View 1 (cartoon, helix red, strand yellow):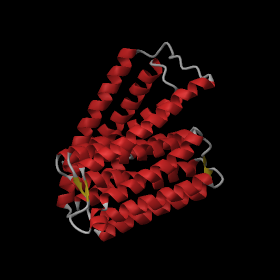
View 2 (tube, one colour):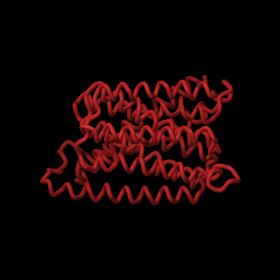
View 3 (cartoon, rainbow, N blue to C red):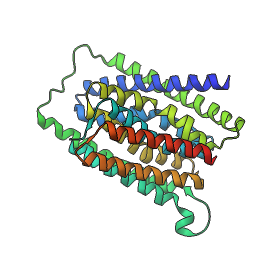
Amino acid sequence: MTYVLLLVGFVLLIKGADYFVEGASGIARLLRVPPILIGLTIVAFGTSSPEATVSIIAALEGSAGVAVGNVVGSNIFNITLVVGAAAFLYPLRVQSDSIKREIPFTLLASVVLLILMSDVALQGFGGNMITRADGLIFLLFFSIFMYYVIDNGLKSRKEGVDNSAPMNIRWGKNIFITLIGLAAIIVGGQFVVDNGTKIAYSLGMSETLVGLTIIAIGTSLPELVTSITAALKKQSEIAIGNIIGSNIFNILFVLGASSVISPLSVSGEVMTDVVFMIILTIVLLVFARTGYKIGKIEGIVLTIAYIVYLVYIIMRN
């Protein structure tokens, strides 16, 4: 029954994120928000809403391993398997200046995460923690990022894009869909955290390992579906922009909000995972700036990297 409820939770998360993105995008179009702003905020953040819900609920329930492992595991999954699968289906061209700047911003966020959680290495005593003060720093960085995104989005109005909403888009329908999606995400997140933790204990797995694997993969499915769909439609900017935006959101907002709610203890194993996440982000940056595209070969390399990582974290448990 626990496994069934976990599966139900994942289904609710995925469908909830889908409805949330659809409804919120409709509202944004009614408000005549520029399309680029919709892509960099609503799509990226909507697909990251499962991670946000799961980590915040985990923080409230004192499951720090699940909260931190979910974010780090999801980001690694996004950079490797999601980008890899999308690039294998259709080469992802990185031409937009905004995307080129967002990848370094993701790298900066990852490095800041490593520094703020390295209390033992930097202070020589105590334990590694993401404190409430650290969480506020993350949220400050997130505010700066949002200002940058909104400013760029509003400048796109000068490009002469018609932002008028089609007549078939209605306020009531989109508000209803958005609320239904949000409710499904919250309920699904509760199911995933509760039942994922039970499975961890029953199999002798640590909370961190479950967060890095089962929960991270499950909550990253919206990113996987969105990016693969975008790749098949040859929408490279959406495919990779969704991943980069989601990873920034995961570190700065999800971990920031979670640690402000309850300080998160960090196991030594996660430090290695964060270093691996930083290396992968650098690799992605190199791929993106070398020929300005991520092709099939790079996609295969990233996919293999995830398989190797998955085997490693399972073996070390």
